[in-house]
Length: 100
Image (cartoon, rainbow, N blue to C red):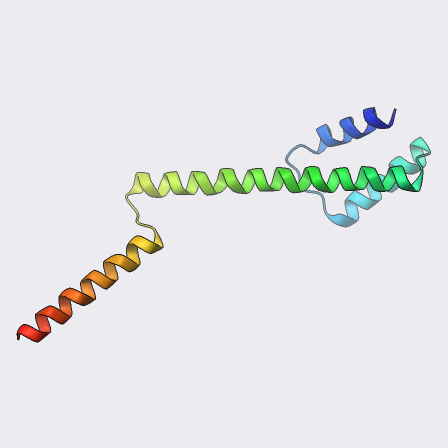
């Protein structure tokens, strides 16, 4: 029964990140409703936290990759490339100033 509750709960949250307080309230309600022990409730809360963290990390990675792809499509340079270009311009300016 506990496994079914856990799987249902984890499937239900999907990509939603629940706040710590809401997660604790939810687990508390499940503990009362299904007469779960404190230990089982804590296990459920830990599983919920882990699932939310994993999902959040996946979403962040997807967003990061999408931004990189968009930057490439738009022809934007990253910070390192920009710094290299700045250094190159500065060196060229210095060479020009020494010739004048």
